[in-house]
Amino acid sequence: MANRSEDLAAIRPDEQYPVELFERMAGLGRAALREARRKGLRVVYVHGRAFVRGSDWMDYCDRQGKGTKDE
Image 1 (cartoon, rainbow, N blue to C red):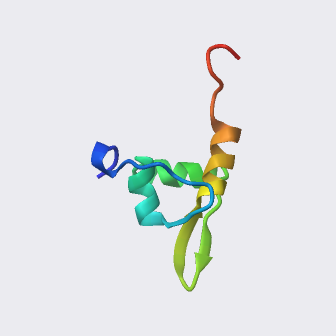
Image 2 (cartoon, helix red, strand yellow; image 1 turned 180 degrees about the vertical axis):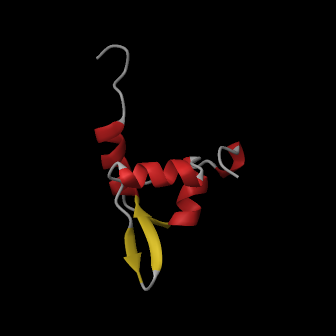
Image 3 (cartoon, rainbow, N blue to C red; image 1 turned 135 degrees about the vertical axis):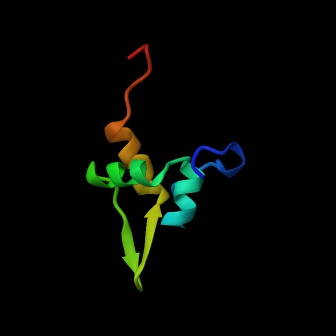
């Protein structure tokens, strides 16, 4: 399921995504998403459903990501 090129899409900071859709868009499998949550990716629950905000994903990437070779 994860990493299929037709499922990959840009994640927008001003959007909120159901976790299942977010996994596909980000190209993450369940284990990778669990690891991201353990490392601080925020998941918001509304009426028993889990969502990831694009802005929270951007913040997570900034905190966890490695810089470019030039940095």
